[in-house]
Length: 514
Image (cartoon, helix red, strand yellow):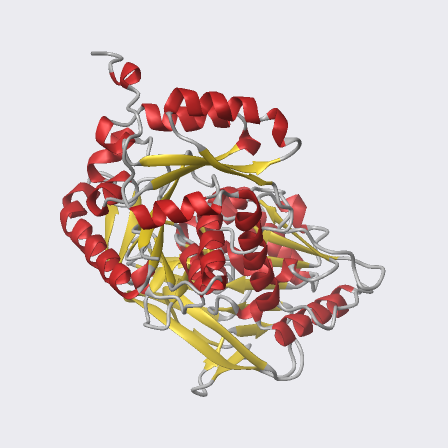
């Protein structure tokens, strides 16, 4: 077979990313040469690719579903929000400028050309390309600058399926309304619907789906049930809700649980770093936004940030900074990752990201950080330093940051394969620039055992948890859900058939206001 498909959504976090991953895995298991594509992504959860660039984490997971290494080709335009009004613009894996919503209009033409070139090249190389939209195609105020939804579908004449999250309620209205607000040319590309996260008896939903078909002329191609086991590599910020648990932890190997509090920074980036901890039986991980939630935690993780200095100010205003200082004085472990690591130091000089110049850090680590215009983007391998949290073991990760450590008086946490020291250890306070470090299974187990020892918790570390195996199992679960609950033959016919023909236009809605 040969072709492409665009999966759009009624809202953010409707299920586009997981449906694309499931379709990719299903096709790959059938021996089809398939690749993912998201023309434009807005996310602070990103990874470093083998070709030395930066893409959204969801596209890295989708690449793995296809049996491919992550590549900047799969997500050529990435917007990383640094505030409510500005984002860093990353094109083909490299940061090129900072843009506001209005400035972005000036870039649309050349970005449209970048997107078109990359999609055409992928379609030439692979039999099938499964594209993911961004946000919702019903954001008609953004249609003129759209690169990822119906702007892409029109340019490449792609069939489009729209997925809606029934768990939020109102999914039939969302699906109908998404079609109804589009102009006639865009409506013509909408070929069907998928309902996501359904619970209960699907027979009760079927009359509504039939009415939706009569009203729109389009079929519902599947009703995907809610699956408790899907949670790794959640890309959307909606997945990092304060006080919400991360994942579905299994019971402890022994009697005691280990409690982890992950600080939900306003501009948190690579929040998925803590998911490796939540894979462990008996480890309860929660996102927190106020200081009392740190008190009973065995480990506090201060994650990455797209706006380090601004989020550092929030730590102080929220009272969490004082709670971290008291925690360190009491000998209770803290781990800072990337931006969180930088906040733990003595000083930060930032004339790049925030333009704030020199600011004081929390002073829990003896290091000074200076921001540089060129972003560090690299995959990393090496070993942990013996001592804290245990014996030297092999580790890996990746770096995405502007800040550089220019001075440190602390012992290193890691040592790269190039022999260069990385990270810091100062008593119970640890820090590193390496994202993905906690996916190193042996190291993660040693860290949890060390935390349990520091806090007097009679916690037993599971001997065989594998984050990579858990991720692969979730991809297979996604493919199984697609196989069982979608009309796969109809979806494959859309992929092979190109832009659909004959679907009606909802003219009565288009006439409103004329």
